[in-house]
Amino acid sequence: MCNLGFKKITADNWREKDEINSYFKTIYENGKSADIDMNKKVDAILEPKLNEKVPLEVKQLFEVARGAIIYGYFFYPLYALGMEQLFRVRESAVHFKCSEIGEIGKNFHRNIDILNAYNIIEDKELWHSIREIRNEFSHANMQEIIPLNVAIQEINSCVKDINSLFI
Image (tube, rainbow, N blue to C red; front, side, top):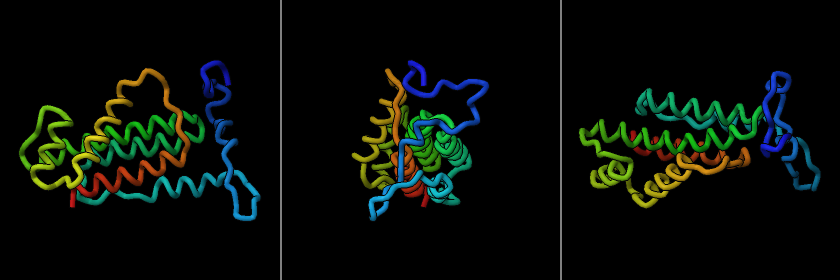
């Protein structure tokens, strides 16, 4: 690593596992540890599915975010970048749902309120929290670095949130 605080990609190392991933281990009940099985992690990343009613454009945005997370194996900051994108994917899903019902607000905040008024969103505070996190990520002053498991949890939450809009 150089002074960036994360892997500097070069022509020689871009296809190599980011060494930060080596620091994370699976700890077994007997106290032994082993390297994380990335095949199992990829399976966990690929498992959540958006339902068939979710618009294609939202699915495309989601798959790009999911792909970035998978490729975090080679460049660790992609875990954060993919996770951050999941918050923008939710915003897009809300916009498409508003379009579907024929009432689009001027911003994410208003669109959340519209869907809440139509009883499509049950937990308005949750969605406004998502909006606030999206804002923080979109106007960042520094590069976020997050562990893979946090990104995987966020993929699951994102799928649940988006699928709830398109029942």
